[in-house]
Length: 86
Length: 506
Image (tube, rainbow over all chains, first blue to last red; front, side, top):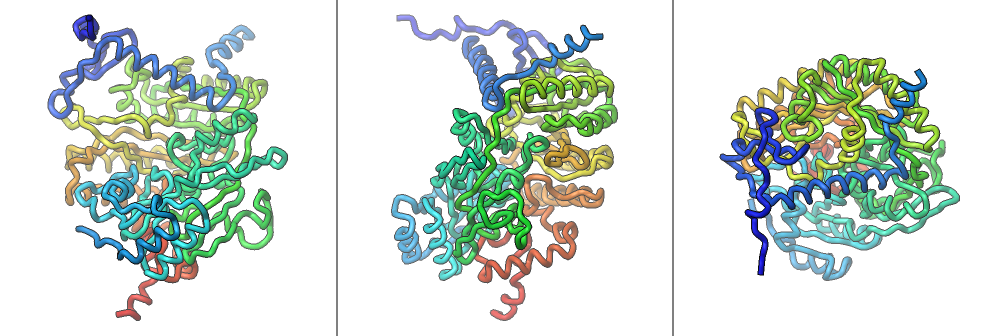
């Protein structure tokens, strides 16, 4: 029986974004692992778990919008309207 | 310092009042009710644990517990969500914690007169979920919205993130029932009828019993505003190259006259530096972005669109660059995260450490925001230089007025604290820093606190300075309503009201 294998979910190599931040998935940032070496060790997360956390985050934000109002007005759309009107 | 257990006879009486299943003396029950999220001297945890915890289910039970406490001269400390930031629910003198979490029912929804009457243990998020099918919301919206409770909001006289549109706790609570420190049960509001919003009959007692941090009684029922659920929400975040540009824009937006505007918030350069470490919205921002201003609005869809267009125009004319829908909508929706997200900060060498979030808040006049910001950051710098356990997470300023979002601002400096490192020296330095932060707020013509209260070590020393002769009136009221000083003693320097009695007993 095949069980979970971390190796099969190995995240991509990191790309440096700033002095303190790296990125492995598009728009998903993480603290430079070098900064998590003295007091807190960074955990190994399989790729699916990182993506699950990010998706859950979007779900939470959508829920919070919906909790307070029936709809959300887009600033980008309003700016286009204003621009079109001159 | 170990605290003595309460006598068995007293515990038997508590059990007779509340029931055996609602009286707790175990270590977990006591220690978990010793602190709130504000910085806490972990190295002196045992100084603050209660001797018993009760979870009553009625006003009558609470009344009997308070009368019992008077007979035995044992402190009583009310506790709701335990999310306050000024130690109101911390049992400084031990005693009995009255935890109201089991009193969490909705008692009445009056659609005709637009009120909802609840018990104090209900949470605002949960209440709004229950009201949604009827087309209503209860818009008291602190950062602790998912976890704070109505009773605590009254005890704190809380501040709401959307108070500029809907009002703050004092504006949303119409009346409430409270057990006085003697055990008597009364109802306070603007007048007699519990659903009346405006009355000129007698003293306005609602405000007296709001924001007392548990020193004047325990709320057992509240009648609240029932507000039509907004059809639409709008939020916009603008970037600015300097703090002063952003500050000017904040004033323009706050004074724009848009009736659906719920609030304007200004993030300073230190806040941007902090967010660039870890926040996916700010990490990719170009270097020229040094400050951010955000607005939020709620209302009917048609009026909201008109107001939003005005806000976008004012933001642009003030030099702001709209940061796009993803940040504007996402960051606004994440406004309660600080109570739910594990936080970390950085030591001076950049290493990640677990830190508690803390913010010192004040009411600061708009005209004084730039100078207060500089003075507060200097205090935070001094702390960090001395102790590698503090981290300056920046400041924000938020429109503070209910329905009229201009004039003064809830201003906070967020400081990360590596609390496992506390010792007496660092704690003393922190208390000194808090006192200086409060002093600057007062000297600028502001108030020590806009939303948390001001009864913790440090800033509480300056409450008499801020209130002047009003503080003497506070003491007289406290002594009159609580002659034996059993209701949450040790708070707000109010023990000094009883110094004559101590002299007599000596």
